[in-house]
Image 1 (cartoon, rainbow, N blue to C red):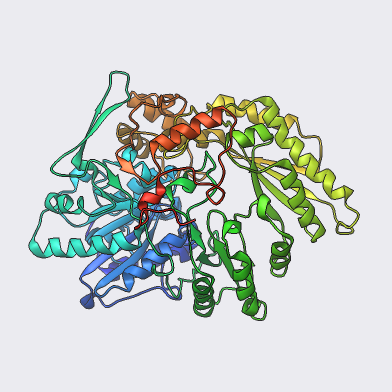
Image 2 (cartoon, rainbow, N blue to C red):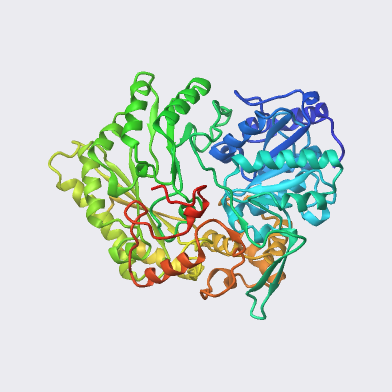
Length: 620
């Protein structure tokens, strides 16, 4: 690609934008976006979201870090999203490199390029964005310090499948480590350090993992034999944790997008972590320890965002909002002013076992659409296996409360392919949905003149690192198809709708989730053969992926559908997210014994995450 000045890029964009769908994705200039004078800036950061504008602009973490970096003197953070295929083709045809939305400058001239890894199927988009920027996709081929390519996010808990493409990873929460990394880079640049010298220094920063400083050896059977640090890199890299959420950085404003994003509202984060310990849930473990913000802090943040964005809806964001210990107090505070200002409240992640009548009354004041709950499994045995700690009686009781409060639609989330699952467990999904339908029509005070709709949404189970099920085999594509067919055959009511995820997508996600560095060649081959934006059905090319595995001589089932022994060295064992491998082994054994573990408020189960607190104690 040729070297473009900003005016040249703008001129080129003027010629092509109207040929694309939703050209507003690519122009910047939204309310609350940050534009700085180049002469006042000595560090430039490209925050890259490897998905479309609509998805990226919904992400709370990006909003927080974008604002935090831009509040630093001399630092300019700009947003970069993956272009859709129509825009990408036009950019390549016209020689337009990937650019920052705020300045229209090519990002290959920035100091640091950062990717947030939210989903394994975004890995090819990372490579595609680097290539669009005019940069080599492999870290070893980018010899100079600038631009340094970094990454973080939940998929960084097993970064090995993309280790050859990223210079360093930030593990855990970024509000502290990212500004520290920026300052470290500034100092290294002033000293004239090489990229290698900077990476050696960065590896000593808490929460920073530099994959090029670790040698991986394999056993004859293909499993990992050892991961050996080089040149003083730590043997184990521990994730970063924010100690006090009331003191952590949170912006007073968000960018208001031109194009409607997936989640078009303000978001405030009420807590981090989860007390529940569902054995399938990676987020519930990698975000431990459990920490809450105070109602006063949340009320202030909500008021600020309402004033600066004009949004008429606030989402109370967390892994389990109804586990927030002061939820009713918080809702009372918010309703004091949101009611009068016609601002709605959204409460995602509600649990059926603590959905009270008072909570329903508070929620009903601000919305009266459908309610969503996640039993995850259809029988009590299966719910015990996954440690969901929810009973059928609690599901029925909660639905009764909702129906009596005027609700007529319920969405129930489940998973297929869970460990030890039988056809009886699958039939139990439909049986539970039918009981909810029958419940509605049995109530004398149900809403008049309206029927009920119960939607079953079913996803294929994907074993993830840092969970008790990280040792389990994943159901194959053929097995998932059989399970989906059987589930549909059990439905006899028109009041029940069934949605299920694509089995091939789940299968690839499972391979990439538990992969090692040998998958780098597969990802690069798949990308070179046209794979990109794989999380979208209209882009996903399963056959092309399978061809890439074949070309590279790698069996995907080795990573997805193979059981791991407890003593196997896993590709992520040298990374510490707080919860011990010993705990995961014990929880896996309890799963196979159909035994539950109490939630953290009921009894400490000794997961080890309290080690990440400054005082080493559990604060529940």
